[in-house]
Image 1: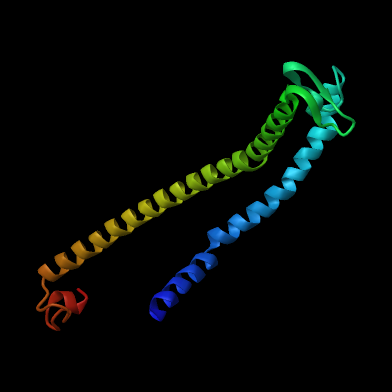
Image 2: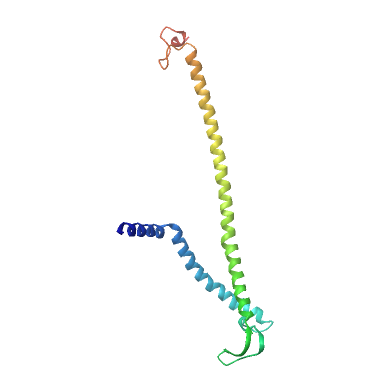
Length: 171
């Protein structure tokens, strides 16, 4: 049983030490900070723009489903069934702004970078393949020349020309 626990703990440690978990943790922290920025934009810019046509706060937009809706001074509903569509609209705007910023500032540039990198890698691979093919052709020519030399007056493999042969005399 202790061996099983050890292997489970080792597996958990390996899981935590992988780069993906750390990347995910960083993403969550950055996402939380980014959410605060987006919420500030919605409350500081979008809500006042919408406020030009009605109330300044989107969350105050609502309709009453049943009966007249009344609230007390604390904002709690006393009677009626309110539908808080302003809150939903505010959340949708926050989501759309967040998604647009993530897409245009993170996803799109990363996609372009990866596409350029893939094109560079492909070009380098093609150049490497061409160079390798040229080297192979050259090596084949050298091999064929050596085979031809061995067939034309060589006495043995790798022994060079015999001293009395015309190839050895330089003539």
